Image (cartoon, rainbow, N blue to C red; front, side):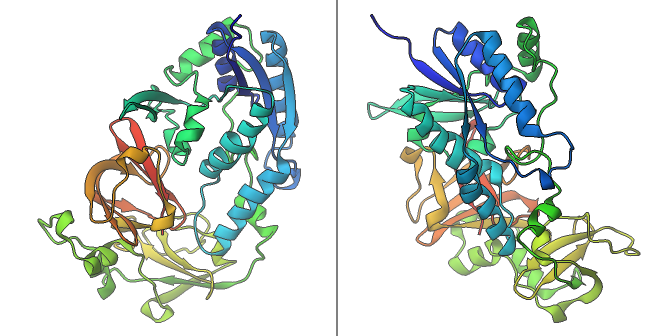
Length: 403
């Protein structure tokens, strides 16, 4: 007798994963619910309630209602090592991490997947709003990561670092649905999570006060806020010559466009004081507490070694807008290995540098040292450490960490 394929569902205590489990049961899988406990430092969460205890209880009640086995797994040690330590290190280096992307790559589809495989699972499933496709390339199966059908909730960006191996074992049961349909299914099944608000904040940690969270490890230290004028000669580097064909750019022009300008204190005037450059990120407006400037000030660069924040006046300041970015060779990741660019090759895709940002047409140029991504429209607040993801239509083809 053929056994049913076994799936371990990451039950988070939210409506999306609850409905994912219900749909898999309907589709004939043998389903096991597993709750990941990844965080238990309540000192930095904003709300008073204890989020993981409530979520764990809800996950257990959902499993009970659906009649499936349930267990909780404590991954807090691995989560601290792989995600929290990474966040502290990135902020300390003046970069902007994306813990949610790392959490999917390192926790949900690595450590959690291995735990599921110990239970002889064929697949793991999550409540992500994205879809998986499968095609044949040279007679071999190749897995596709596609956007969720609900364009407001599409989470493919958060999964942009997954590998073919990870995708082969992943199921996304709600990716073809709208959020409203997911809630309706949960109501019809009388699940406790049907009306539960979506979780916000860091993956698994919940809402945290980021400066306080960072202050656990990164101590406050006062430094100057410097305003950089719009007419700095260096900004000419960021301008794309009219009618320029991206594929014809030489190395020097590419580097000028794609690499961040290194500012010096003497290039602007001091307009205020901050408590630590490592608490700020490029494009940030809130928290500077500098008044009387007319237009709002935006962070255009941070120097965590000298402890200086560089700012520009107004959202169209030339230091905020860039046409290009660079990804070092060892940080370039192709979900579709069969489409990997070789040095000297270029192609056109659409790309985004943050979740929910509309896709923009971009030219990708692969060089020996890494990948240059050149956008048709200038991008605001490109920050080192963020992820750029590139797409062909609704399929995410690859991603990389911005230099």
